[in-house]
Image (cartoon, rainbow, N blue to C red; front, side, top):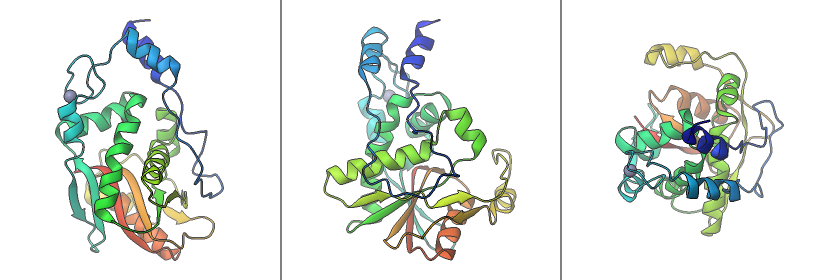
Length: 245
Ligand SMILES: [Zn+2]
């Protein structure tokens, strides 16, 4: 095993707790995100990481890349629903997200959550919030060892609560029909792929709802999540994402 592989193995801990889109809806207000354990700390001592944003050696995320991740980005869905993100989907912010999504850099999930808190504050400065993660396709959960967006939601809510904000995670959305990987689809194709794909399970959240996704590109996924939640009676106030294309 190369040192890089050993390091990734040490870091590649499943953090989802096995949750799937088919689980019962639950308000996991107390769910604590997994924190890096002694194994990870030891791995960092033995194999210091390169910055996932710019490849600078010696740190998993350097100061300038950490700043780029918090630059902020704003947009809106076609119906006017506001969208807020930590940063635009380019440069170091994009690299950091891809490192977590595609390269198993699980140690950076806390960084992403830490940048989501101010973006949430920008979207909704006051009051209680129910964060509803966009559900992952089964294939993507398998490939990534769990549901990344649900994990980011739990971490973001925990950090926001630590700062006195009443934020809960409610996994209200489920996938109700087969959705194909949309990497190669254009905007119209994505919209058709996703139309009617999500539904609310259990009682819809009654508190202000913010939909969370990792990246908002064509807005097709976010718009479908918002549509399903509103159809179920949830008061959706906006969409939050790590990056915004
Ligand atoms: Zn960097």
